[in-house]
Length: 180
Image (cartoon, rainbow, N blue to C red):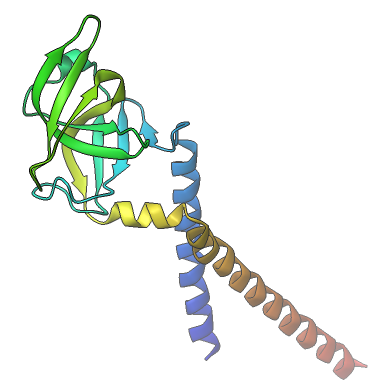
């Protein structure tokens, strides 16, 4: 039974360490808008099903930072909408302005269109997506994720170690009684 408890303890401890390291790495790499940034790339969670044929809600995509001049028609880009929510859309046409561009976007999951300014563009999809990782990271950065993923398991580890300390102190105390 003690061996089983120790095994469970080490599994929980290992999971806590992985979550803590993930949280640390992703926290260090977050920019002021809360996006995870690695060099010239972003890791962005998909928050809606508007691009239904390519992305599902909860996927994580890798987006390369690009100059708006590098974006071509039919490219899939990420952008911040007027509510500062990260969205993905396909460029259907490019509208040149005096010093910038505007992009008309369509969404593969429906017939909606929208026009955005080049200043809203975050980057160009690099064709890499990781299913369900967006759900994991969104949960990990939430209050419940930190509580359930870090604080509660660390509390269990603390209690386990405290129990081990009491066990060894009791064992040491009983040895001293016998030797007298």
